Length: 275
Image 1 (spheres, rainbow, N blue to C red):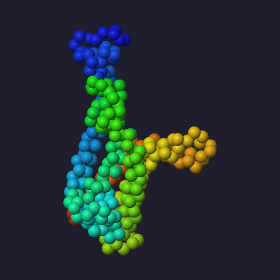
Image 2: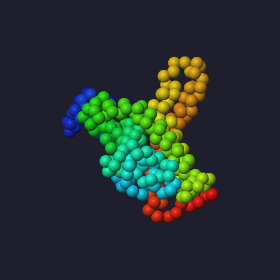
Image 3: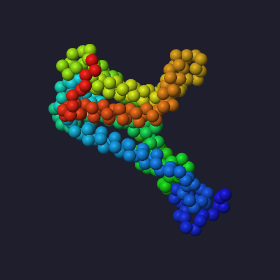
Image 4: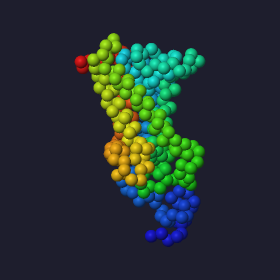
């Protein structure tokens, strides 16, 4: 029970010890390992950031016929490795000397950074805002997403529109994976399976997005007048219920797809043939 007075050893005006809160000496009353989830989340995200940064700036070993790394697709610069019938669009000329991955990754990166689930993940994991349920954040004030840079999170719906064509291009890359190293059709290797799993997870994560659910049926006032959109809304809603799991699964799959292409391109092993 709050008494309305601050314990003498506390510093009023900071986070959980703000004068408007109950005068409880403990920062929280949880006795479980509440810190484990945000710590694992932060470690997982840091691992992906480190790996993807290395691969994005490497500018090498991203194509092993017929597979192209999803980090480099589509390849929009003149300095791209030639890919037969692949996503080579030389929009940027010889003046672009950096890795072509930097031209395309901004779109899936922006989509994931502004994703509602990933916001929760890195707000808790890195900023402790808040670190867990019933554990108050240590910050002096809270302004939500009304100020720069967090106000840019509102661009999520627009990044969703850019994520759709990217997923479409990755689908095209998956179709091309049904060729062998000589570009003959009607073949499949272990890489084909890796790409199939990745594109299914990419589409499932993209379509499970909250913005997608709102676009499909969130603005409707009468579902009975829009039975098709209502059915689509229910399907997206089922995916949306698994948005967190799909976010992590697709993050892992896209990294594994890139790693698989890297290992093939560096000659670590040959792609096992299925048929």
